[in-house]
Length: 182
Image (tube, rainbow, N blue to C red):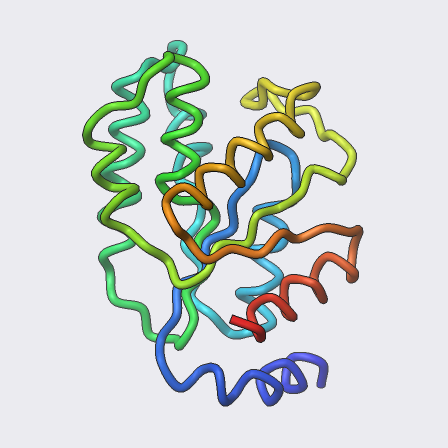
């Protein structure tokens, strides 16, 4: 019943295909909101490839691994999607910021991917959720500074974005409103 409500509410918006990217610092609910939106909107979901890639390594990651993740992501983003909306759990912006933070620079590959891939809307997740520890997460006490970098980068590159805040259903409703206002 609730899923049909959301589908009916956004029928006019869904007359053309759209790509919505969920982005932001670590542990701010990106994957959760991406899965929820994809389910409720019957959208194509493109997962974050970094986690699976990094978990498969038997060594610490290096800068070339970020390029490998960019290539995997690029191939996935090029695939045709059958639904009218495609939800991305991160894109090249995350790789750009991650590379610059960890290595002080970013490869031409990632920069080119970021410049040439332009989702219709970014949902920038505010880090107002409690931190959840994870072996791949590195920035528990730096999320607000990283959020500001994401925001600055989106503005500098003239991307359409909305900031998403709140807990639970409030966060979801804000995301739905942002999608509806685009």
